Length: 111
Length: 112
Image (cartoon, rainbow over all chains, first blue to last red):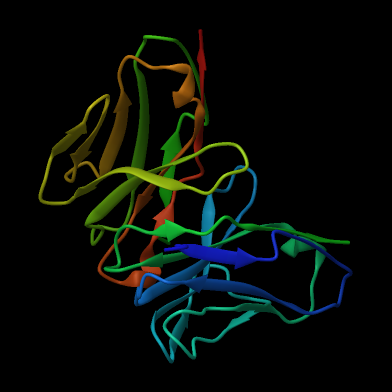
């Protein structure tokens, strides 16, 4: 099993550009989440999904969209990138709403 | 709103000594309390967790204690080793998947 994979590993965007961060898992987990990690602020939940076709907002959803058309994939879309979205983004999956398995992360810089 | 506070933000210990990190939470519905370890440039990984019906759990050199009345829980690392150096995050979760909240993290440095 590859576990949770994320692409790209690094990305630089200009303000106003849009892009999609990819996340995939091969463990057949129902629960998936997106977090952003900023220095001194821990991990903050952006969006989450409890199954294919079901998504909801977390703590910091503004400026991000998600969709979950399959159990395996949970992409995160930045609509119009802003410098405040410079962060490290982690995708995670879970079989039972408890232990989370994190992907390797995407380091995003918005200039 | 609901949040998880974690202290201290940095912790330096001599190799062989113990390290203790404390977290408090505000949501009384929280019933799952995991601890994650994150090495530099790596992903967070679960090291131990505890559920609300248990007061203490131990796994080799690490242990977690939970006081539901006071709404706080702690991570204890005994006989620390240099490879214990990392950032440790606590979290609190309810049955609602969207209520998974992390503390701000503790940078632990173990000096030989």
